[in-house]
Length: 48
Image 1 (cartoon, rainbow, N blue to C red):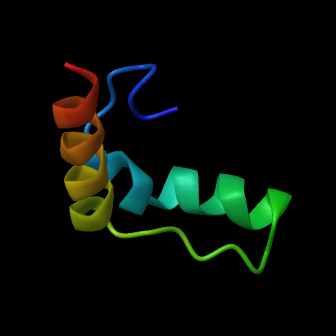
Image 2 (cartoon, rainbow, N blue to C red; image 1 turned 45 degrees about the horizontal axis):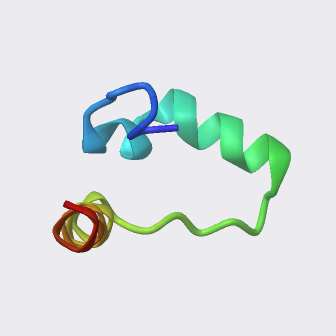
């Protein structure tokens, strides 16, 4: 969602997204934006 829609990584930490994922899966613990950034950069390096 974040990459596909070109949203800022901090989007995942905002209240609206938090309410969204808690409604779908209350036990979901999303990764921090720093972890997501690191993972995306690693994938980019492999795919380029």
